[in-house]
Image (cartoon, rainbow, N blue to C red; front, side, top):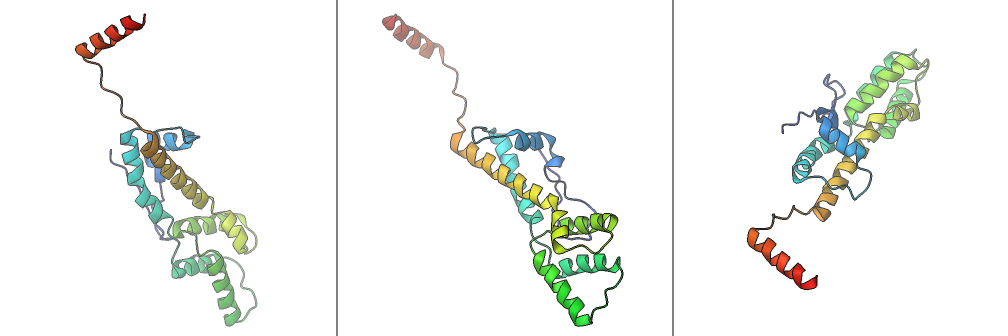
Length: 178
């Protein structure tokens, strides 16, 4: 099964991350597997393992420049504060530090949402609060890894059906105990 995933940390990329939504069967498996007793099939395990590199890439933080660019674009939409260039640069660095672990596309989506919703320039914590896709990606990746680990620990192949000779032997043993 071919899985079309887009992993990007580029805040300017127009194609959104699709993750498990590209594979509804796996999305359902990850969403409904509640415990470590849920054992996926070998085929599902292989498909889940193939998703891990894309998830890891999609969790890569934005570059320092990408973070500064996203915050800078957001700042342009609000009236300029009366601060010196040095203070503006220092604020930009503070925001970049506070958001340094957020993937670029998630940061760009959060900034775009705040631009539509916020009357005032948001604090870094407000921007982070809009980064729900980051938590979802982290949760999905942890569930994928848990499903793979559970499969590796607990999956057992179906036993081969008994041959006629084996059935006769079992019947003979059962007669002795009857």
